[in-house]
View 1: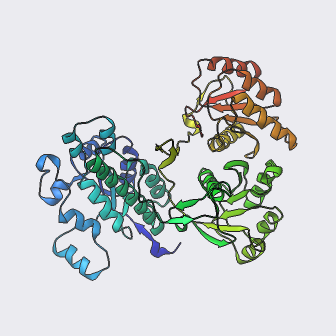
View 2: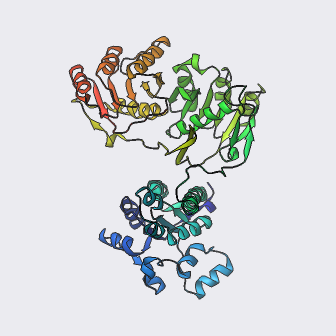
View 3: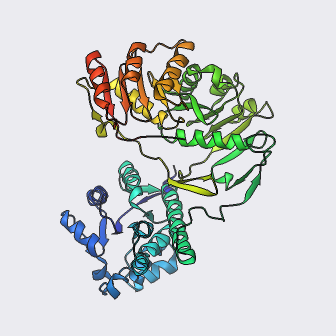
Length: 509
């Protein structure tokens, strides 16, 4: 990364509606020597943490007025955010008007949609239309070359990770990605307000969702198909035939799955379910283990890697018949080899923010929901058994739990040594899903001795853990919540198995 892309941050403006979750970010700013300025309740909260903070009112010379409608809307604030250091005219204005630069903006908008959901009166809803916050977000995002914007509470941890890793610096790429997230939030927020004022209700599906791409056909040749959106924002197509309707479903499944993993990982997707995945020290080893997980299902699949594909790995992958390979980069020899089959599609993946919402057409309408980004960590688990998972079991349980959320329900993932060795999905009972997973593993010759099991939902009876134990499974992770959880826990204790409750169900229909 070039030095020019790195920026050291010195001053942050924080103005949040909901203070929950802001403490670690505030304390990090303080430890990094980043000066904090703030407004109203946020400032009082920061003072209560014992962290030095300056008030916006002090800086502008104006108090909060009009019942709090105007606090930060002032040239001394927006000039500090929008200035371009090094630009002569901007530098002169900054000096002449005594404007101090602001290079981090942290905002959490008034909860307009939550107010609608609560049935709030019209006048109360109007007061939940954020003006200062949305203006700060847009200003900071516009000036992302110099300013880091943290546009909502769900981005606090991301900002902490970036600033901790870089010790108070950010890269241009960091700032650009956060700016993109900010404009996504801004667009969604404005659309919600428009829909309320236009029709009195939130419309969860927008008519304007991008340009239509005509596909060869839909799921089957007799069906028409189109894609509305910007494929170029997600990947660069390097070779092969046009992507199809089914290809796009598998690509989406592959990319959302791979977002769970940071270690070198290779995965194989078939009919939007993962049938092979492994993490290893090298991407080549990850490929070999992922393919070995279920080589029969891998035939004709969609492959994805989260590391560069060099010629050595390409030669291994080239032996398999597959439709698509997705990776962040390829060398020239790899492209030449892998594209030798003219219909094979190579996609160079781009860094983009995972969608926060999902839509699905049903009946004569559309279902909307927030995306399932929840993934508990071992520190959040509740260990139910006398025996705790060993360190190796714990790693496998994390891996298995990340995989199972991407399998169609009812779903079971069996994992050993960070490799999926058996999966059951789309079954009408949980025990059938486990039976399928065990059979898959055994058919491929995988030993289940010492394997772990993840379930996307709770076990209604102890029969699943009994079957898993008989097959060789030694540790289990599940959400918990069944009225008969004690039956499963008791069986595990009696047989020396470990069981953890994650607290998070991951149904995927």
